[in-house]
Length: 118
Image 1 (tube, rainbow, N blue to C red):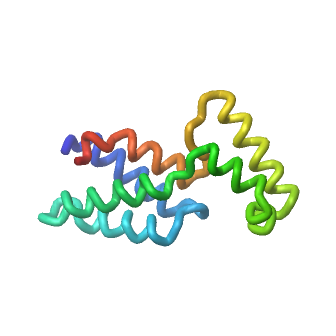
Image 2 (tube, rainbow, N blue to C red; image 1 turned 45 degrees about the vertical axis):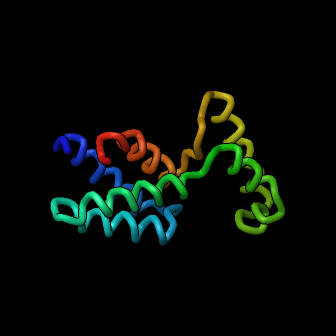
Image 3 (cartoon, rainbow, N blue to C red; image 1 turned 90 degrees about the vertical axis):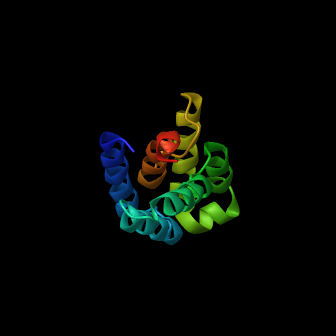
């Protein structure tokens, strides 16, 4: 793998792990991947990491549906849920495909390099 791409993905992986919105599963996969870089486990852990990111990244439609649901109101509170839904609709109208929280933004940046990683 190209060093520049590797450095970028490592940087984004640290950003992902630091994001409050990052799931425990994604953090674990990220750490396992970091630990495997440069070893004979790298290819296997890369596949697992990519699969985890693809499963965790939140499509914008799902974010809107969740924020507007009773579950979203329970998690975020009524005002915050409304604000999240409005923000999500706004970025969707500008072409966003995924949530733009720090975890999803880092995941999207990493997934853009997927072909170079695999």
